[in-house]
Length: 288
Image (cartoon, rainbow, N blue to C red; front, side):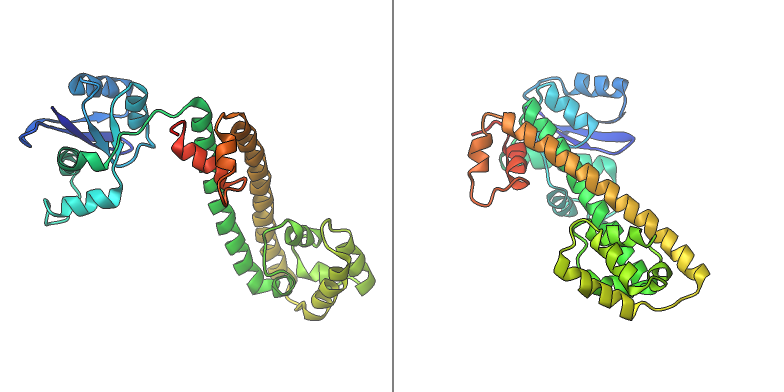
């Protein structure tokens, strides 16, 4: 029996193959090309040959899994701790890392089960949910940047809205072109009318927001207000675009989820809402 470790990278992949006596049988590297994959498959050979890699979210691992190889996903923190016993210097060394992964498969392979090939529906849901998570992170970063910006030139908005989960704060900002001077120059009645036209604001909140803005907006220089409002507009438009894409992904994921034969099982789990249910299905796949 042979055991393989692959230290994946964006360009070249270090590969180490060990025998049961922990001796290195082969050690080489292959690029992320069709030729490189062909070389890797030819050198590995047997489909039952256990393979360890730190992440299966890359082209090499996905090809091997699709071809039927027994590929195991080894958490990077586990590989790091294991490798520290063998490389006391701690210096990054790709061939050494590949050797560490192969050794982990030989000595502790039972703790790292091979990744099963997901069904087409589960694979799509997993891809969509991964994209959804990345977009959510992007939204959070943009909201934090916007709040920091507003704190420096339009803090009255933050006094009205402590949370930016809905589109209401963004609609209010765009209604003033994100410029506090536009709101400051409005008569109170016009300001009240502008706020009442924002979709989603309750009537009892219109007067509260109107008073907060009318009484707390600070007059600043036109040049400074213009440059800051331009930055804020870019951030607001980007956040609203992300929200639109997230809504579209929610719809795609829900439709796919409903077509799967196990959707009712995962939807019935305690706490499994419209976001968690599809994610559980994507992770467990068709394994009951």
